[in-house]
Amino acid sequence: MDAKILYMNGEYIPAERGFISVRSHGFAYGTGVFEGIRGYWNEEQKQVYLFRLREHYERLHRSCKIMRINLPYTVEQLIEHSVELVKRNEQQQDVYQRPVAYKSDEIIGVRLHGLHDDYLLTSEPMGNYVEIGGLRCGVSSWRRIDDNAIPARAKICGSYVNAAFAKTEAIQNGFDEAIMLNHEGHVSEGSAENIFLFQNGELITPAPSENILLGITRDTIIQLAQKELGINVRERQIDRTELYTADEIFLCGTGAQIAPVIEVDHNPVGNGTTGPIGQKLQDLYFDIVRGRNSKYLDWCTPVYSEVASPTK
Image (cartoon, rainbow, N blue to C red; front, side, top):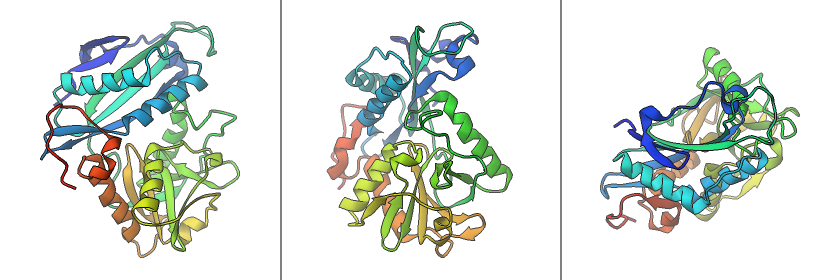
């Protein structure tokens, strides 16, 4: 079912009325921030669960602060908008929500101060963003944006041109996805995903200083690896050649979910198939996001009031 309703500047309106001006600052200069939020349909419970909704909106507030955007809603109000929008669209399927706060003035001139800010939220049906059964990746010639150029810790609309260059290069070179290095040549992340390597019995992932987005799925994996699998997780610099010697690699993000990597630059990762650690985390993750694991129900915001008990 396509979305019929969206939320824009304090109103729920028909989706066909959801337009911004072609002269708006956010469109011309990319001066906006956004989030990507997934909702998962549980058929047995007849329920949509919005995953880690609070954390997404807390990050949206931080992105707005960096971009000098005045977001006139509290985290609690934003959560209410998300839940209500699924209800109004009568969605009983997996959904993807995109809240966007942006500079809306119709002016020519690059700046962040002294501009009007607007907000919108959409909720659309969505399946897998990337293949979750095994990705073939290439190290990109495009370097990851630097914090002193465009802060990677904020989800800034215009910054995703960097990801688009890397993604298109990867696809046109015959890969499924890109892996990006920072300006020092260390592994940063995928085109729009965080990255983990399993090596010598532990998970390693680039530190926040490597110009990564501080991913919510990344944080989820760190917690699950430590609590559920008893695996040590280290955040550190990762050299490019470690991609060729890792036992397992996987990308993660709200869109990508958990996507194992089976090849990097035509070199097989491990034995060239999904590894056991990535598979265990993927299975655990999909149980949790659909509200089937009672230990992690606090990460799942139910949309509909009537719901059966979780199965675990």
